[in-house]
Image 1 (cartoon, rainbow, N blue to C red):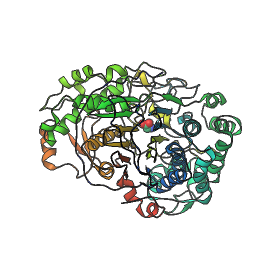
Image 2: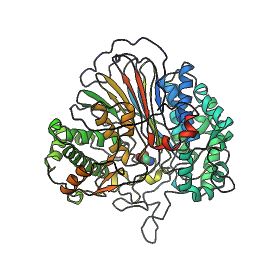
Image 3: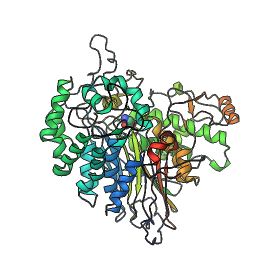
Image 4: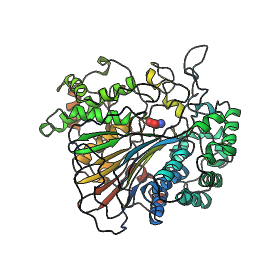
Length: 592
Ligand code: GLY
């Protein structure tokens, strides 16, 4: 199981800017207790104090409202996580859902127990290493990992909802699922993000009768603000509420899924579903400038890259560096961390991931020694290969409740609207998470993804992920951080952590202009207009190539708890909510 050490070190600060938010720092008034300091390297410290109220930040006001309703009904942060997760699967079907998977990173206030619930999808048992290669050419078959039944791995999301409710929640599952069930029956408003993402996947949705019936109107996108109902989704949640895990993974639902997937050319079996289990893993924990960082272990690549980057930067006198030098060093550190991601990381239940080495201070010191203070290192001088696509998919939410329980949850169906297939009668899309494997190790797949043996397809294996739900436990403040954004998730979380350390509030963290480098392609991506021209020129003088990237830069959701006075705050990324302002702000839960 987890080969995850808990090394200790320190590190550095960063930049930031203005912002906005969606979320509810709610006043369940309660006198805060005096906070205790975070002790040493341990996060297993039950006495962090208590917030004055709860806070939830999610990508959709209906989901935030569902979580808050469950808290008001006596649930804890973990019940609220079930409610938010199930609601996001309904109202943000392009990003996550019952046909997908995710990571639930939880910290229980009563005993400081932290756990990483790995609900990542698994390759079907009949999967083979070369299943997406054309036998004639040996090359990846176009779109085979993207659209349709063969692209779908075995979902983990339903198992996570049951597991979290049964092992960490306080309410019966049916109560935590009730808001999503009601909303599915009553209907929600089709928003601008739904519309934008649907535009991108309309052809694929049209090709599947189940998906077309659920998401299209006469083959076209619903109009903005249209009321969307999904009684099948409500019925599937009821199955879970009544029969738990088996309501999805055995019996009529399992049979229905397997029959439809196989009829459409897929390879799922009843065994695949019956064998699916979430895995409780030990989170990756490290110290950074007096803060405990609790983050995602493999099969996520995020926590290790986060630790490596900060570990490299820790060796510099950060306070003495100017903004150009800081960005240069951050890019050089990320370049090296992303290189290692491609070479070493995969499902730890199948391959030996050298976690201890990758996060060891001595290893970081070696990487640091190769960084030139004045010159960019061309990526092709570093051994290894990695080109990762950024994708506007996935969703994240962050919760702190009034007891101090924490939940950081990132969940996905991979590409927007997953594999664009809805098995009739189920109400949810299947994922295309098989595309997160290295389809042909060492060779780019149809979408440019390159990896190595560690992430090759094997039966029952979980594909490597970039999802990086993270908890930051500091002496004064606690933060719950995460975002969608494909390969950019990691650089966004690195930046958020540095901004948090520099004192930014939740709104500033989620709104900060973003910068990314992932080793290959060898350029720095920045949000348009966000980089000072003088700093850009200085970076270019060091040999960096800087490009502006107009595509979506994540949808970060952050909550912060101030330990001294118990105050909570929440920040929802203004990038998408700014787009969907009208539709979502009226639904409640957005404070700007
Ligand atoms: N499917 C996106 C990720 O797991 O990183």
